[in-house]
Length: 406
Image (cartoon, rainbow, N blue to C red; front, side):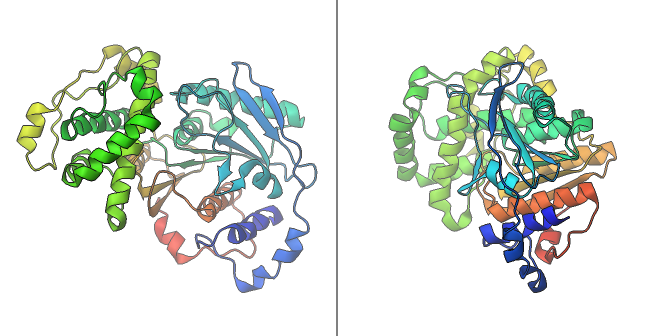
């Protein structure tokens, strides 16, 4: 397990947090291990059968025979196909993975915007392409994804376990995809109620002007409105059940509002086009948490979801049926993809009767706001659960063990 020991020791060097810890007697090995780190190879670009781009990286020396596959998060529909989210706190993930002895592969997906199901297919094509590039199948294949990539990872672990040894799904909408859609839609209708006239369009229709001038025109307008009426902003956060950091309430309230509205602006039209109509509806929904809930529910704008879109969302729902190790990690204060997804997914896993899942809740505010060491520590746990072999020189501290729930 020398490569995993390298992994854990390096994790303690790149970040000061203490998700994992190395005892003093093991720290003496760091210098020696640094001199024997594998040599990263040149990453190779390619195109998968359905048009997605691929990136495959294999160490030229010291490859441990295993593969890390990465699924990226949501990218706006109007951005170019590319390799996204490959930097973690200033560290380039393909290089890091290879320095730890692993081969690395990722894909752009064939499209941006809503791309969950396409991402699931494209990753499968990527695994096949890697085997061709490497000349053999890897010994272990670890599926990792964040945000939209988190649900891609979870669906692959559930539906294609024969391709993977285990998965690490971070901050993904894995509990209930329809509820995630409702959360985004509710936030927009509630914003329009508390701050009328600020944004054009509605929760189910986004004018092109709003998309084109979100950053230069509408973010400043939203910011000014929120700063001018903090009471309305607080009611919006309460009625939407959105996360903020109470220790930095003013700053994180604005960050949450602009962050969730970004998804409304850039995802609404794209999702409706791909799902055959609007998947969002709030007929009969009762909102609470304002100073006058009766008035709020009487005046808030109501919408009805398209039946075709309701059916189209079904394949995006996870089952909780997992037969290989899956670790999920989520910040409790995630304003974009709320932490309640973890509770809902745990219920699905419980009902399926499977015990192959670990949850790591992180006490922090922000979407996918993990430290480098937290990500590395979660991956170390995944590798340990897959291989079943103790890691020499590594002690998991009590704080981590208290965070992990089955």
